[in-house]
Image (cartoon, rainbow, N blue to C red; front, side, top):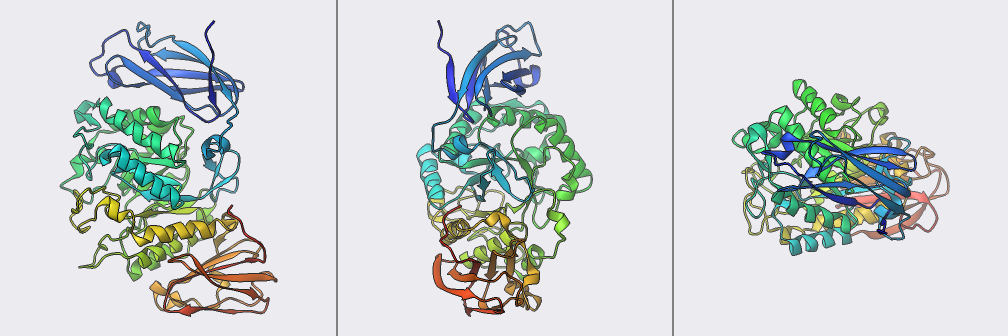
Length: 531
């Protein structure tokens, strides 16, 4: 009598299959659909080729009980891939792992932020390591993930195939060859498996860009899957990635750094429908800088939240763009998150010199966080995103400046400030906060966009968060907030509480002190614990 396999709820089941026929190009020549049937119905996924005669299927159950599975191969005469079946039992997870305990991500009922399957709010705080999984050693990757986990990050953004920033992995392997009819390189993805596994092991969500699509460097567009492959081959590649990693705790970025307007938007809508159909994981798209593309994808079933890039600028125009007034209807259907604010230590675009510093990173991060219903924000450090082992100008990014090593860049002060952002926001019910510029009597940003005071408050007006890039006096309309609240002023650079004072119903001015950026938290007088 064989033992029944048992796995925890929301973990990964994996089964290996062995084809009995030889295929010249397996990912092109055959498809294997696997139907999983549980207590309340069926779900389908695809098996993926893993080299030689080996195929694998991965599945993450979302319900406890007995599950059975059966394969259906497009070549039914291949008895190693067709009609194979099995079963396993899914048990309640007895674990402190947040993914096993709370389940995968979904959009909240009010469509403003992300939550786990059980409804627990999820604050998006992603670090950008585009090249990390491709170029890191296993020990270095663990060291980096431990640092990001300790600092409160909740997600890691990376590129899941070769692109203009890395033409191959650290062993010199590309994700595929023969772009006319792609041939997957299994060893590339076997290496990538371990890096994605470790992201989840550190209780972080993996956020792969499935196909980079930037066109700004015309000399390198041939390196990007999104600009060099025909649509049908892009679908083959993305389907492969989805079948291989769809059972992990992931959020898909369909494409990276593209324009996605007009005909190009229609192209990516088609690709998304074909490649992401049936996936249970959330998905967005990563646009080029200062582009608001969510209207192009509003009706797409795979498009879960609006990701945008405020980009590598630190000027007044950037402040105006991030903080531009937008009607509430813009945020009614999906969460909105800045998935690429300016990178720390990167050269600002359209500027002859200088580097983006920690204060400018804080400014862009808090502006972006409070410019839409609060859901989260991403961070990036020059040298980490490109994963430099020695100081160098990142490949295909000549205007970005010499990057530090990833070890040095990992310790830049902006990442510490972002850790404090997470700690402060976690003290409150951040998911209740919506942009609220009308609470201010005077907006310093009217005279200088770089002095814009970002303000968000709850619908009940019993909770507010304000960021002042230059500190100073914040003037709030008398009676706008409910009575009996207190104000806490923080130094966002080090997370230090500078003072706490009651806020009377008639109070309209709060002096945060001039000369440095300040964060003002206004809420009920009560002990606050991490949410």
